[in-house]
Amino acid sequence: KQEVTQIPAALSVPEGENLVLNCSFTDSAIYNLQWFRQDPGKGLTSLLLIQSSQREQTSGRLNASLDKSSGRSTLYIAASQPGDSATYLCAALNNAGNMLTFGGGTRLMVKP
Amino acid sequence: SAVISQKPSRDICQRGTSLTIQCQVDSQVTMMFWYRQQPGQSLTLIATANQGSEATYESGFVIDKFPISRPNLTFSTLTVSNMSPEDSSIYLCSVDGQGALGPLNYGYTFGSGTRLTVV
Image (tube, rainbow over all chains, first blue to last red; front, side, top):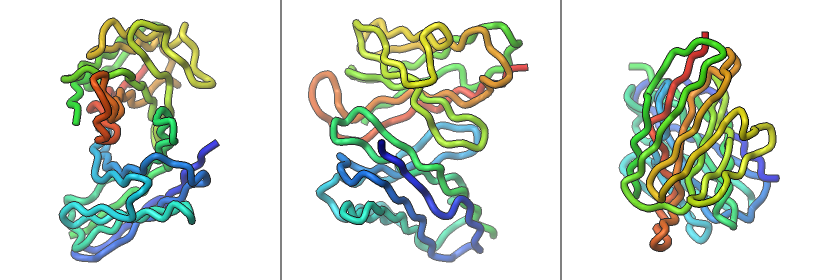
């Protein structure tokens, strides 16, 4: 059974810092890995999707990498802003494409 | 990618009552998924709903408590029945990147969530 872990569980940084969020998964047989953002009490917004054959994806100040062999993904946020404050979730999709397993999330606070 | 309209966005309900949550997708999709997110926790899959067949429930979730309807390829409902305070959670519907008309490969898309408080 796939298990997804995110470290750290919470992170507080001053505005402008570059930061890295970590995601690890136990079963490397994944179809893709997706990073989401969740604001308090809200739904999930997809940030980046990395297919199993890809190494990284970039969108604006966000860069996500994937190392399937070691079971790890990282989300890099450059020049953090207070508006980046949210919970970030990673999720691994199995090869059958029908089971998305979530990590526990990293709660990020960016202080002005 | 698909756009999902989910309602209600929030509700406060009395214990013992039921609430039905609706999700409407702007395109035809084969599977729809229902998740629960308890306070401070990550998402847990409740069930997968295919059009024209019974929903498939994950361990710990039963049809009598969480009946699901999937009348067509763009709509689904989840009912939380006989509610207790332990049912207070955010409930989310989702679709995958596969459409009924072919693979879309956009990853999973989620509705905006229903924040349920049971008092």
